[in-house]
Image (tube, rainbow, N blue to C red; front, side):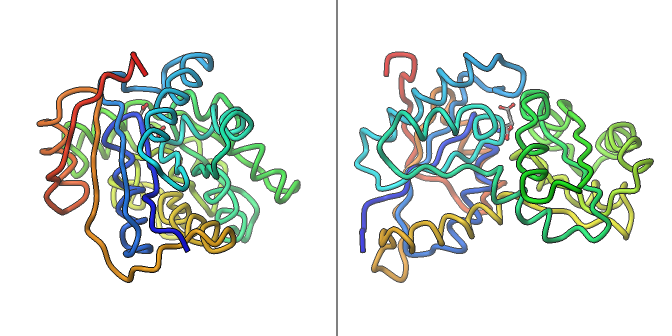
Length: 268
Ligand code: DGL
């Protein structure tokens, strides 16, 4: 048993979709969240930069006496998790493996679509992990970079979201997939639009939900679960604009975000 907090990080506010699931599934765990709001997006950056940024986020969280780290960002998980697990001596979990495993379990016709940032899709991390679990599965990855902006503008239920979704997902519809992985922190917020575009025969997999489940299992296996039944001890750190984080983040979390501090992440 271990009452220290879990550290969670993302490139900005998107990781709050993962945090939300962790709060629901692990109500006794204290959490420290870091959003790298000064340097978002990670999804368009080079591998070297995403690794450098992710290592700085991890070093910051390690200064807070945490017991484990959840990389809530799909791009950072796809590109930096392997390196980070080798480099840091603390349990670290990302969103790719939980999402990929759930997709394989969900698909019946073994045709799976994955959508994410350009960095996530180009890394082939979801594609390779899915094929590792089931080599006979066909995986089609599509980068949908505009979705992040659409969600950050609060346009998830508009015609703009619908038209963009139809344009991006056209190819996936032609491949007759039956499962779609929402491989970016922002996409669960677009789920109604995405579900409408893909139609009834396609199941959506939310890696945020699956990651919270996997985090619980990991903490249990390592004897790191907290003894508490409930907590509301959540602390937030950002690298820029705490006020914007409070406003937009509060909408995603559906609760007021109180304790937010700004951090100079470049000098970590
Ligand atoms: N959090 C990122 C992800 O899940 C999306 C935003 C970004 O590009 O940084 O891939």
